[in-house]
Image (cartoon, rainbow, N blue to C red):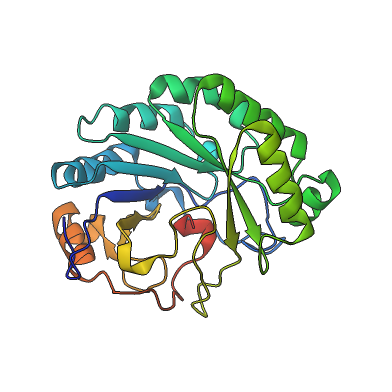
Amino acid sequence: MFDSFNRNINYLRISVTDRCNLRCSYCMPECGVPIMSHDKILTFEEIVDVVKYGAENGISKVRITGGEPLVRKGIVQLVGQIAAITEIKDIGMTTNGILLNWFAKDLAAAGLKRVNISLDTIDADRFYEITRLGNIEDVFNGIEAAKVAGLFPVKINCVVKKNSQEPDAVGVRAFCEQHGLQVRFIKEMNLETGQFSVVEGGDGGHCASCNRIRLTANGDLKPCLFTDLSYNVREMGVEKAYLAAIANKPSCGSINQMNQFSNIGG
């Protein structure tokens, strides 16, 4: 599928839940955010239908996000259903890693290829300060479980205020070099003001070559992270929502006042 700027859209990011087991300071307030009712969240069958249509029309890469995707009951089953779609060649997941130690082996067996794990510091006290709830040892155990399960490459997403020379980021880089992990530094973003930048060590933020669209947990197909545009697959039907999202994908991100990172998946 090509958009109006001749970009080949072959990458679908799927937020399977708006729920999370952490309260990271740059993502949501300490008290949390209002969550969607269960009847508004897409069923696995609906998600698979969206992926199947995309796969028949050029989508070959899928990334599962949240919220925190591992809190969605039956997530291994969903991975297996997506992996069974012949045209899908690459299935990844972005996770905070807290539950990964318990899921990595089964996810790999179901067809997950690789994981990106969020880790903004390697200091236990700082980690708890940033996440408000987390035990960093759970993340370390999750990283090791991912390596054992063969979810390569294991990538670390590190959010920074300004750049990768900040003390926490320097520590994360050294940790990744020591443990054979790939690291990506992501400058803290703001949806409402349109603040985003190119990802250091990754391909995010390059609007001119953006090849992705996003499916939110409640069924909105969004052509860009930084736009208010969305096309609901329940209301419009899968085909019409896809066609609208592709046709209206902007040349560059602007602002998004309709979503939060907790429900769009970053």
